[in-house]
Amino acid sequence: MNGFTYLTGVVTLELDAEKCNGCRMCMTVCPHAVFEMGNKRAVIRHKDFCMECGACAKNCPEGAITVKSGVGCAAGIINGILRGTEPTCDCDSGGSCC
Image (cartoon, rainbow, N blue to C red; front, side, top):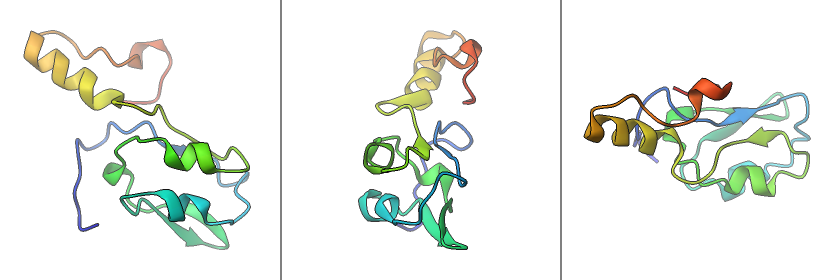
């Protein structure tokens, strides 16, 4: 993957490095090379490359990865722009996106 991003700074992807066992499953299933290995654990290399498909979270045996899979915040932001309203991506409900 060579730098294809959706919207910068809105991805819901999170990694708890302490839970990671270094199995590399996230690297195997990620279609956009978001992860790499560092100190025998996964690290997020290119968070903005994430399309929030959820493959990494669903395949992580340790539950170290979380992401709101589906259309994510990008759709909320785009809908807000099209409607002339604020984004509706659950950020005001304690989420860490946007």
